[in-house]
Length: 386
Image (tube, rainbow, N blue to C red):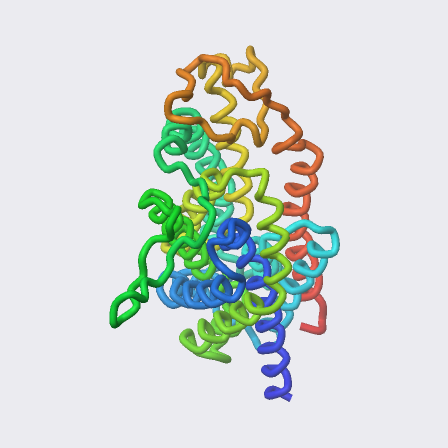
C-alpha cells in the first residue's frame, strides 16, 4: 500500500513539474525563439540545464521552507503529501482551462496552509512572512521597471539597438585548415553582443524559474522523507525538462508570437528584473510567483515610459491622465530621445498593453487558485479520512 501511494505521489510530482516546464520555458525563452535567436530544441535544453542549476543551488531554501517550516515535517504523511500535490496539479488544470497562468507557488503554499489550519500546526510567523513578500514583491517589481521606463529605457534602446540584420549571425570561415567562426556579412559587434544578451537573460530566467518552482513539485515528498533533497531536485528538474521538450513547443510559439508587439528590449528588462526578484526571494526561502512579478514589470515599464511626457508629481496625483500601451515601449533613436516632459511622437492607447478587464481576470484567478487550494485542503484534512 505504501509503495503504491509513493508511486502515485511521484507521478503527481512529475505531472506538476511537467506543467511547470511547459509554461516556464515559454516565459523564459519566448523572446529568444520568437526573434529566431534560438531554436526550440536549444531553448528546451537550456531550460532544463539552468532550471536544474537553480533548483540545485538556491532552490533548496524554498524546498526546506515549504517542506518543513510552514507546517512541521511530521504533518507530511505520504497521503497528505500526495493530496497537497494533487491540489497543485488541479489548480494548473483549472487555470489552463480558463487560459490564465496560475501561480503554482501560491497554490502549493495555500494547500500546505490548509493542512496546517486543519491540524492546528500552521506556523503563523512563517506564513505572515510569505504573504508579506507576496504583497511587497509585485510593488517592488512595478517601481523598479517604472523608474527604468521613465529615466533609462530610451537611452538603453538607443545604445543597444536590438535590431536584426539579414543573413546568418555567425558563419564558419573554411579558408584555413581549421574552420573558424566569424560574424556574418551583415552582423555588427553590437548586434552580436545584444544577441548574446538575449540568450543570457533567457538562461537567467530559467535559473530563477527552477529555483522557485522545483519546490512546488517535490517539497511535500522531501518534507516527509519519502525522497531525499537531491533526489527530489533531480526528479523535479527532470520533469521540468520533459515539459520543456514537449508541451513547451506550443507555449514557445504562443509567447513568441504574443511578444512581437512588445519590443525585445522591453521583454529583456521584464525578464531580468522579475528573475532577479524571484532569485532573491528563493535565496531567502520565499516561494513566490514569477508570473505575477513579470506582469507587474510590464505594467510598470509601460507606465514609466508613458509618464515621460508629464511631471512625476502630476502622474502620481492623477492630475494628468497616463495611458499605457505597447507604443509607450516603442524604440527611440539616439537623436530622437525626447527630453523629460516633452511629448513623444507615439500616440498612446491604454488598451493595447494594459486591458483592465483582462488584467482584472488574471489577478482574480491568481487570488482564487491559492484560496481554493487552501479551502479544499482544509476541508479534506479536517475530515475523518485524514
